[in-house]
Length: 176
Image (cartoon, rainbow, N blue to C red; front, side):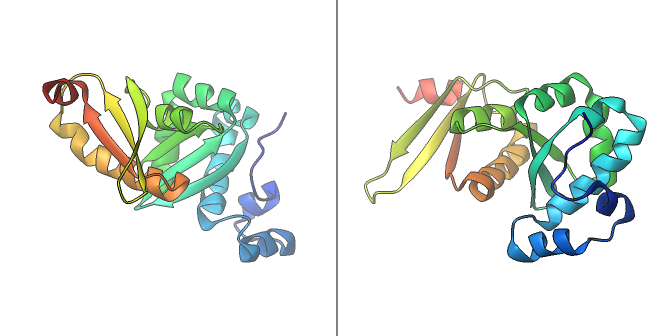
């Protein structure tokens, strides 16, 4: 089964959109990120055969980072072969996050935070009627993660419209 992407494979190889794909872009059915990622995947498929088995459903660009939504099984392929993600990051010139297609917000967060494990994900309703999703991560705050967590919060807000709050296990238990 060949690589499936939001635009025609020919368009991805040439870099020029056909009338049909251009109409999809104009109508908002696909994004510029879909086009950029599709081009990168087609190039990568020539070098890494496993990429040919993948299905890219959609992609998002958030502050120079790319979020690729693929079939759930394809997310496992990318995780098992780190060179796929590395080459995509080189081609797209940004960090790449791979998530499997899911209707579950928890599954989305688990995929996005991978390889970090989430202990719990809760929804907190605020007095003004808004809600915040709180994710608790094992361990304690690590400075190198701080910047990444801010990026993850932006990604979650843009992709799913979820206001995310991240706590570390030690912080959460100290407040009890």
